[in-house]
Picture 1: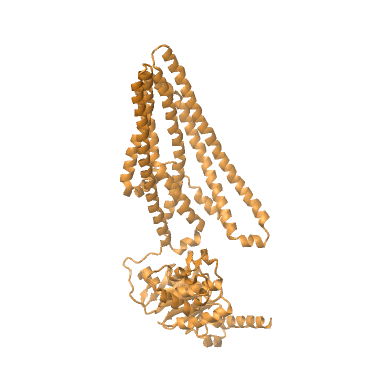
Picture 2 (picture 1 turned 120 degrees about the horizontal axis):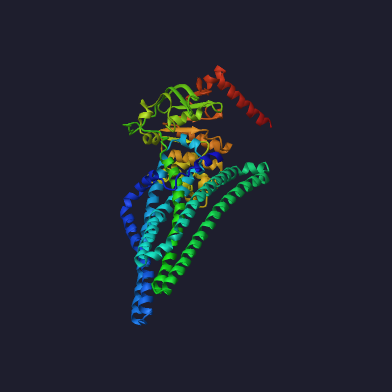
Length: 597
């Protein structure tokens, strides 16, 4: 897992990638009027501060020097007015930029989540969940900084520098060149800083990825760590990884700690040169003191956006790396595609037929080999076999969570690959061994927040499977809050809720995958009684290890190493004294041992 994180986090790319930026700007396009407004406001707000040193020069040389109090009062009001104008423009500019960032990121995050939901299960088999969460949170947030305070604020800094240069050269050309004499050193220092900061940033990302991967893995497996008393060893490993991450951050801080004081030093040198040269000009009566003071102000203003641009460089670099990872996910086409003109189903009889089906999760490593069987409408079949025989794979391909490589699967005589996926799954309900409950209420977990399912139907489903008994004892009954993954409920209770969930949708095809393996004997008896009622009028597929639960099935299919070895009802298979008979004998002996104990 650590290697998976590392390979993805190594994506650093350029600080500016025109290909990625062009794609990012497509998300800004719907809000271009806000972009244009923000840029125009930036042009104005960048110019306003430049008037203050100019007004200072006028106040000193024209009014203070000549003791003109009235003129000084007027110029002070104008100066105050520029502050009011700048504040008002900055308010609207900040609002437009933040609005743009939030709307753009909302669209991008929504698109990303919708895309993830459409991806086939094959994709999730190979992709760590933590990575997907990082894409939808950390990486998207990095892009938020780019849109809200990166792209447009770069314009602000650039326009500020341009306006300052315009004011400076308009006021005094020679003094302007003196001020800019430190620029070559600044350019070289900025280039060096960018290169070093980029390398340090890569190290920080790599060590952070390592840290995240380690924490996710060990928090998930905390019970294993504790049962084997490995806390001390794991703490040492974590401390080592954490130390590397700390050092990477310190290295990054080191370059910033040199660069920013360096800019301040150059700014001070520039001011010193201005005082030295300008002071000499004042002594020779070729320069007014107001111009000198104005240039000192311009110099301080000139170096501030340069420092800001270095920070924008970091934002830009982070955003480029994040956008590449986000777009890599958006470009992933691991889909189960609908046919070009899919068949839409209004109703289903429930006839299922597998014809010479071959299926593999990877390449030619076939899990199912030449599988053929037929289930008539309303019939119940059971599928048994050792672990890894391919039982669950049959469910996965029937529901088109995965597509088969050879053969065909028919529903009411129609190839499932020609049926619209939503229509296909609308008529199928599955109860799995590992039940997943969402944060919410008991009611929302049964209905899956489907408001079209009336509460009476939901209540009847819960009563039919025996879930109503424990739900009624909860403090808030059906409005009881369910924690993440149903942490406050027992395994059996979660299983009963999953039964009620399946029934609430009134499916024509019902699939039970080891559905009673996690419940106690008393609950299993309740469920078995419910199942007898559930199966009436429905096509049903039951996968079970406990052979006692499937003895009444119309047909039992015995899978072994991906092939159908035996078919028949319970008595017929026992009479064959084959694989099913051996499985039954093995379980019967286990039961006898338990009774003896």
